Length: 193
Image (cartoon, rainbow, N blue to C red; front, side):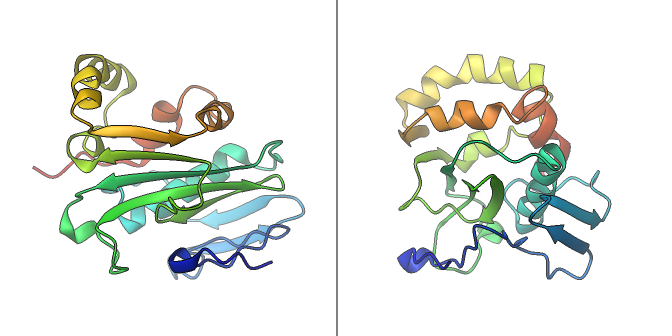
């Protein structure tokens, strides 16, 4: 099935979800959609610059590891968008933002490079600086930073949600600990100084 998202066009096959980026020669990828099993050979302990193309690929791999062969019992379309990123992170697609979209449909989860905000159930938008520079932090350090900075960031409009926030609770159930310990600070390098 093709899904026309206008400018954000993307071919989606819900019964056999393709691994986006699987054409990358550094990875040997096989995916059995009936078993929801992805096999990938690559060093997954590497860390990447937040929201870079390699970071999104690592995020995709990490979600696949966490989900393994489970079928998800909910559907959602969640877009995360970061404004004013460093220029070298832009994707040459005309957007001045970076981000990713989580698509959960028919038991499968796909990570899509780019925030497809026009069709998402929930959109999280944040300024790359400062929030995008925190994802490498250990959980306790991030929690302290967030407690100290969240009220100011919210007041300044540096982040906001638009849509159904119950989507976040559904996704949080995928992580044994939390999204920072199990996902973000496993793949995110400290920002360059």
